[in-house]
Image 1 (cartoon, one colour):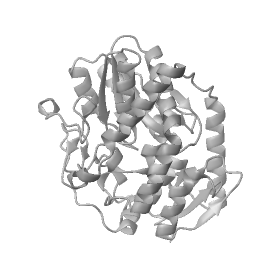
Image 2: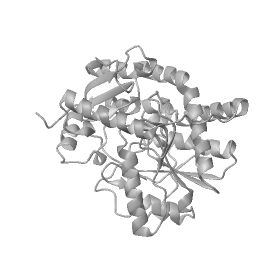
Image 3: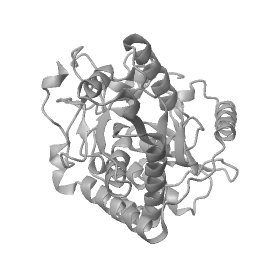
Length: 368
C-alpha cells in the first residue's frame, strides 16, 4: 500500500513538494506517429505511453531564457494574486495539491508565498489526474490519512485550455466525496483560466507562462504521469524520473527566482488585486472557437484542438502536430512555437482574429 512509500520530491527540496507518484522504468514510444495512431484509434490510452524527452536545443533554451525574462514579473504577480486568493478562501493550514506536472512548479511557488508572505502553514503534494480516468484516488486517501483536513485541500494547475481537466477534476472529486463521505472542494485554482472553467484564477490572459515551454527540466525532472498495467491497484499513478538530465535541471532555480520576485513585489507595492474575470464569457468564447475550428479544419475529435500557448507548446513538444495557428507571428510569446514548427516542418497559419495567441492542431491518425 501507499503509506509505506519513500518520500519522493523529484529534483526539488523535500520541503518543496511530495510527489504522490510511483517512479518507474518505462521505455518511451519512439515512433510518435505510431503513438498517435494507437491513441486516436482507442487501442491505447495516452496515459499508458510516454514520448521520449530530450534536452532543449541551445536555440530553444535561449528562447526559454528570453521568455522567462520577459514574463517572469507577470507570472510572479499572478502567483502572488493566486496565493492571496487561496489565503482568503481557506482558514487554518492549507494543503496545496498540484496537478502533475504543469501544476507542480506553480504549487512549489505558491507554497513558499503562502508561508513567507501570508504566514500560513502550508503543505504541498503533487498528484496525477488523467483525462477520462480521473484523479488518483490513492493519492487523495494518502493525503487525508496523513492528517490533512478535507477542507484544507486546494487543487492547483498552471492554466486551463479547453477546461477538460478542470471538469474531470470536479467530477471525479465529487465521485470520491460521494463514495467516502468526504467534502473535498473539487474546484481548480490556476494562474490563467482561458476556458472559464476554473474555480479561481489570477488572470484570464493567454500569456507565456515560462514553465509551460520546458518539460521535465522545470518540473522536478518528473515525466507526465502514467497509468498502465504496471501500476498495481494500491499504487499511486506512475512517472519516470529523468536522472540523466540532472546537470541541466532548472526546477529549483526557476521556482526560487519567481518566489524572490513575488516577495519583492509584495514588499514594494503590496498584494496585486486579482483581475476581474468573466468566466461565463470566457467559457462561451472557448466553446464558440472550438466549434468554429472543428468546422473550418474538418476535425471531428475535439481532443485534437489545443488552444492557448501552454497547450500548443505541449503538442509541438510531444505529439504529431498538423498545424500551428498564431494570431501574430511577431509576438514574442510565440517565438518558441515558431521555432519548434520550423524545426519540425509544421505549417503555420496566421489568424489575426484568433481569441488566443496560439492554437495547435494534432494530426488525425485515423481519418486516413
